[in-house]
Length: 377
Image 1 (cartoon, rainbow, N blue to C red):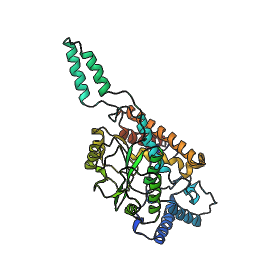
Image 2: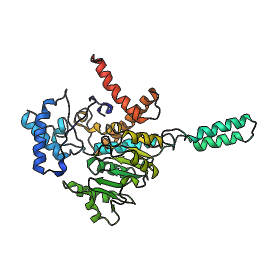
Image 3: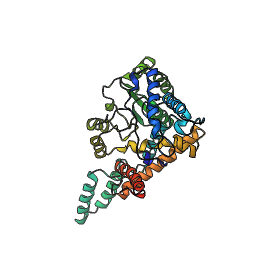
Image 4: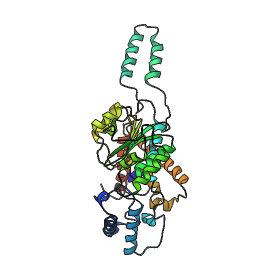
């Protein structure tokens, strides 16, 4: 993921197995301080840089940076450098980046059948048409042209505008994705947490999202509280969130392998055309294979989550961003660059249209090239 970011970052990412949901504020503060005591041994401009992730927000960043200052001689660097000097200027960058990648993927799609290929029926019909023409049929040329236009449509552009977007999770990334989807003209219809999911059939607009943000700002608050503030929201209806009809699915929850073959089939059966991952490892390999088989566009998390790194501390030191508008421009530029790189790599390794393979290979190549340059074989 880091190796696709475009910056001078390594290929690894990690964290802790601490669950903040059932901890008090004092316990979280003490954990952040103890964690930084050990983590600080491995931090520095030429070693590693910590950043935001699942369960890490402005408060955790502040606790960690405060402990760093207590144990090291550092000057004030608010908004830049290590841990942004304790004040992350764009905590929504990761979620915005995921939405920008989804938008870039839709605008780049080559045909209505997902990976730019005609459905299996098309080659067979066209082959039959060739046989018919050899037999002397006069109308087969027109039939062939009609089939080509219907089954192998020309390149078309699309966008998130008007799309029904199923989002799982309700943390910083999920809420930022929902905000940017609304800005693109899309309609987020779900959010979830460990207690269940809410479903707004007509979509979550900016005012409803503001209410949800206020609810989730209280540490430990559950998403189900939202139904008290909304007359149209449904909670746990239907029971399986992946059975809700949608155009796009963006899984952002912290649950690893939440989408298996069964969930992938449900999504495809209910009209989903694209899955862009906004969390770490949300889909199993069986689910990814199912996406490909059913013709869904698929954006792997290693690609989508790399977009938001334009707003990490070291990158901001090299390319400062003064406003959300500048952040948006940088994210859009990075999203297109990552997509182009992944597509080019997939084509080079004989996997045209397979963004998953393109992402894996492109990520590996950068690390491998550095290892080779350093004499590691």
